[in-house]
Amino acid sequence: MKPGSVAIVGAAETTELGVIPHMSNIQLHADCALNAMQDAALKLLNSKTKVPVAEYIRQGIELVLAKYKDQLHGQQQSLFGE
Image 1 (cartoon, one colour):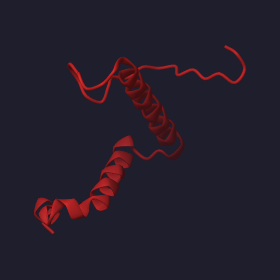
Image 2 (cartoon, one colour; image 1 turned 90 degrees about the vertical axis):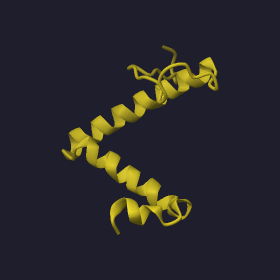
Image 3 (tube, rainbow, N blue to C red; image 1 turned 60 degrees about the vertical axis):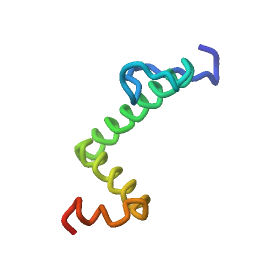
Image 4 (cartoon, one colour; image 1 turned 90 degrees about the horizontal axis):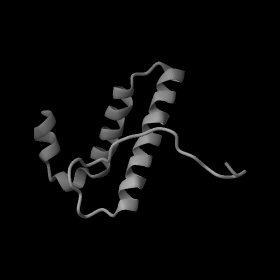
């Protein structure tokens, strides 16, 4: 490799499975690379903190739900019994 170049060593699937007609080949490759990098980062964080990866995923879902709570139009309360 040339100095300053980058390599992603690993593999992952695309976020969506099956035929994905709305994504180009480069978009599919980028999606796989991003998924592989996120997986590696979560595994590294888990090895350093001993917090299960599932806990980080749960926290991420909570952040997304909080960010878009206005779009749920009160449905979040019924979903979680609040």
